[in-house]
Amino acid sequence: MFSRRKLIGSTVMAASVLPSLGWGKAWAKGGVDFEPRGAIGKLERMPSLDLESRDDFNMSYRIFVNGELRKAAEKRAVEILKANGMDPTAEVPLKQAVALFESDPILATNMHGYVRGQQIMWSQIRDALYANGDALMAEMEAADNTGPGRLELNPRMDLPAYTKEEIHNQPGGYVGDEFAGHLYYYGTNNFWMGHNYQDEMHASLAKGTPIPADGKVKRILDVGCGDGRLTMALQDRFPDAEVWGIDVGGPMVRFSHMRANELGNKANYAQRLAEDTKFPDGHFDIVTSFLLFHEVSGAANKKIIAETARILRTGGVFYPGDIRAPYVARTGYRQFFNWWNTRWNYEVWMLEHQATNYEQVFTANGFSYAPSFKPRPGDSATVLGVKQA
Image 1 (cartoon, rainbow, N blue to C red):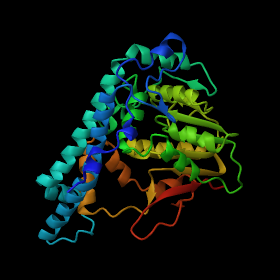
Image 2 (image 1 turned 120 degrees about the horizontal axis):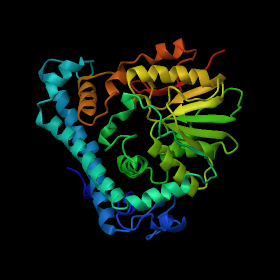
Image 3 (image 1 turned 30 degrees about the vertical axis):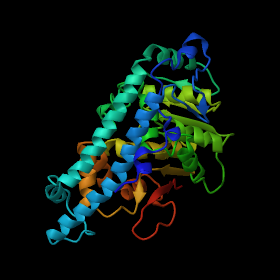
Image 4 (image 1 turned 90 degrees about the vertical axis):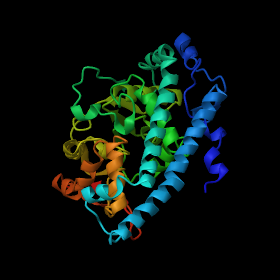
């Protein structure tokens, strides 16, 4: 059984959705931030207890689905494998795993609960955004040409087909909704289940980012920067460096720039392709990313790694957050999980990501390839690549 505390969650910590009434109006009238219920550090509070409570409930439901319901699904998968004379810890072909599990009601309930909760989350946030569309757009427009950081938009850029998918069911994806940055930011606050309202997770990622052996860090690039939080955290860690965040989504970098300005962060943002960054050869000391490579096609991820090799200097560090080594064993449950996440949660490129031999791609482009730390047996670690001479 689940506890009441796990189900109900913390109302105070759930202040993560845009207000549905009045948010941004003061910016539209003259550039003064409007916080009807104040702020908690970096996070503006919602002006409505109704919105706060609905998001709190949705987040608590997510905790239950990802926790106790997920455990029940994993237990059921083990039972099914054993009933079929199979080792639950052994690797299982994808098609066989799907055939074994897709009709089981416990596994289906876990899958259904996750996806429907995700869809409800996006819907309520999007409704709040569009209720204030004019004011929100005016706020972004007012920030476009202000600093301390720079913003570059390329609205006529030719977008590859793979960039137009609605990854994890986000309405419009990263390029098809003018408020994609807002959607992603507040949606992932819910996704991280109350652990990133002050960007603390991104601050930890920035703190753990390796630096070149010679200690020189003058320029940093965050590829596929999304809502810009890792970019800002890197700027905070390296205040004297020139830090850029790029993303194919114009609305993503537009939101990132606006928020960076509000927080007094001088990070720069540009709408550019990760496989065609337009930066000079050998320009950066560090290139990093957080959740990029499982959200691009298998063909694109190889091009992105080649481009990263071009723009990094010799000895420069490549630190992508979702390329891990060694791979986690593809057990029956793991295979099924990845299948439904691809099919129903619309992580379109997840299976291609997992099928990519990244060690081969790294070494073919002149990178070393090694775990960034020594993992415990059965665990995996993020990969660190260093550009060789």
